[in-house]
Image: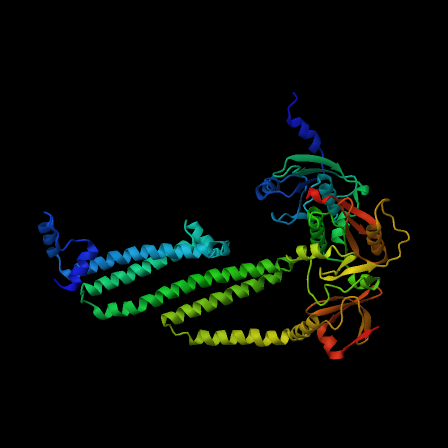
Length: 279
Length: 271
């Protein structure tokens, strides 16, 4: 008996040298199909078992990480709920199908199904990519939704209807990135999209830098002021031609008050013009 | 025929508004969807039910009278009700769901300044609320089981600093501690054994501890029998635009002063 058959017998639980009366029957059964087919069947069964196990494990791990709570309320999760399932459940099933798919292909190749060999080898190469692409798309949709929700939450105090564009922009940026990664994973030509992304990022970073230049300068100056505190609340100071008592120092501005007039001085100005402490 | 519900009919007859205090979502929706001809006003710590007319309740007032007074005062400020209106208040007197309906006539003398204390102080309402919570916590637990006193001066910190002097080195110098931070309860508990006042800025930064306040005390009208801590706490609010919150060492009550007057007196044990 070949080593492979011994292994096979051990795995299926078929006794190789069973002394009882079932022996002739089992041997007959064993001889009914070629050994390769038996081996392929075992691989398939083990594959399905592993798939079920991994799927459950994925779900448990994601639940343990608190994923269901943190993606609560995203539209993907809500859609999933409408179909009586959840994102975590879906990911679990995805893992299961992937592993089952791999097992099926492995079983087919072991069983020496020779037809369309090239086709199958292409599929084997393609399957993991497809799997990761789908996972990336799901994660991208969920994360994008969540980012949009979080930003909308932060901006809820700002009662300006137009402010709704910011969470939407953030959400679609994440969607776009996820789609880009998924497409390049599948090997689709994405050069044009990458150029678009570069242009978009350039616009955000460069124009944002110009637009928020004063804020950034004030923030940098404010960091120094907060760390070293050259003047504190209650000191009488003069910045340029403004003088008064310091009421508040934060990252961007210093509030100086004088006889009922409160000056809000950007910290940038404190650095540009220097500050005089009046004693 | 007299039915038990007649009792309620008298209470809610001809009211101009219905005030619902901290309703649950489904409770509020029942009224909001019913198209009542009286406006429904929600009074709660946060607008969890997305009500159209909403008054923010800064503290979960245990005392129902304080809670209703705050709600009515806030509604008067917001021009939701006016003097002479009659309102029905649906409140939870005991913990849990709505269990009482109270009929209240809005009167000018209900304006005690509690709402004003939170909404129109120099400091942010959330800062005042945080200081209250710290004071209440301190009043409940004390320092090692012994009652402690503390004086917090909130807002207009620049002027207060100029009207006070340090008793010793300022433990909060060059630090960036805000009253809402989780560590603050412990820190303040430790520092409360120092004499003097805590000074807190408009945005909640603890500027200094260990300050001796030097306001001019003439014309300050506070109840007799309160000690030097209360007197100086009240006096500084007359001189500057600040709010002071005092935890009494002798009777354990938390009192708030503004404009030289006592606005609010609460017992920490009730919260």
